[in-house]
Image (cartoon, rainbow, N blue to C red; front, side):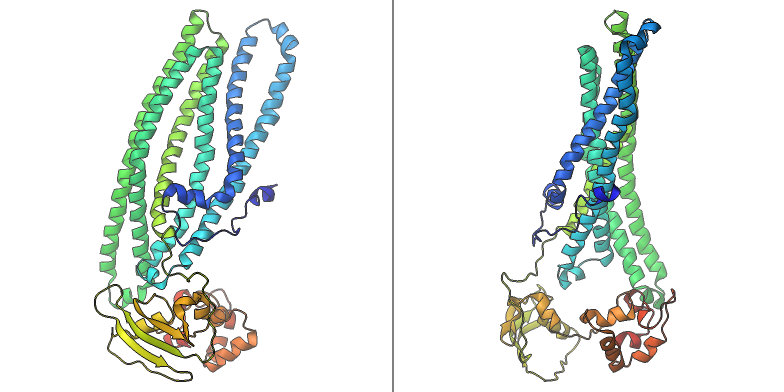
Length: 510
């Protein structure tokens, strides 16, 4: 049963990948949640039925009080069928409705919405250029990829578990009171209007406050991850105190933004308590007045009292759900700065696959200044012929690394062209370009995976013999056999730590 509901939506289903994702929160959420439209409709109907079943339970309470006020000997004689139905409803019908409701919300939506968002967000981020990553904290990017999907799941949860249910409950309560006496609707209607005013005030203030708080948390996360990533430099230069001072300022900024957000919740709770008191007094008071003048029964008072007490209990939960809803929208809006950022470095439409024949590289009048007026490369023309070994010599900042990045098309050139075997690299796919160029990086970079996975990263289908042969050619095979990580994995199965930290510099390079 659980698996059926968990598999109603495939979070990894194919979709049209956009270069320019929707940039408003409404269109962003609608685009991502398209696979859930049918489930949303069903869940909305079931949530309404769940609220209706609660209202009907209150109606049953009033009805029972009215009939037991008469002759006890006539109660079961005249109403036995209704008592049987009430028992069936309470023990079977209502639990089935609520079971279906929680299965759809918990096992279909909560499980899959965040998964779909996280998968598509990560996929979108990986399509960005190297330059895009160089302009942000890796920690902040990762934080947004992880937090935004969680918030999207929370938004969907609140819509169906709280907002949809509560609206259906209030309108069902109005219908119930109107069926008894339309005058009983007035206290609830007035309370509902005042409650909406409080909600509007909360929404207007909570959303920007939540976004500011989320921004502060992301910046703090990025800063701390940056410190941990460069911990060798921090320790080497005894820079702990300066890093602590910087972190303290960021933590204090996070505290201040969060404090402003929590002030709003305190005001909300105070206003809510006043409104709930007015609802209880007015609704029960009107029902007692109608009973006093002979226009209502004891069952009416019981039903009105039960509804007032139930709404009292619900309103705090509803208000918190609403504020949580908009708080999470603030987190999503903050995350959209990363997840909805357009892909600027793109393959041309109908781009060709790069075909290597001689491996000749021609640089024609190449200029690149990273958007500045000076620095970088300026009108460079050079040809690298097949089988040549070429060394580039120049002062630091002369553009040696820039030239390599442009040949790899990590950036689009600002002027000029780069051709490989007569093919303009701007008109071939980036994947085919990168697959045909082997690079030994200046900064040795390894993934926190096994030695085997790192060696075959450039050739995922490499055989074990090919992996060992490559290691031997790099004079790495012998020391690899002696490696063992903290989990007891040895040799080619040993994991190397983040960025290969567990290996020496020479071992990482090999």
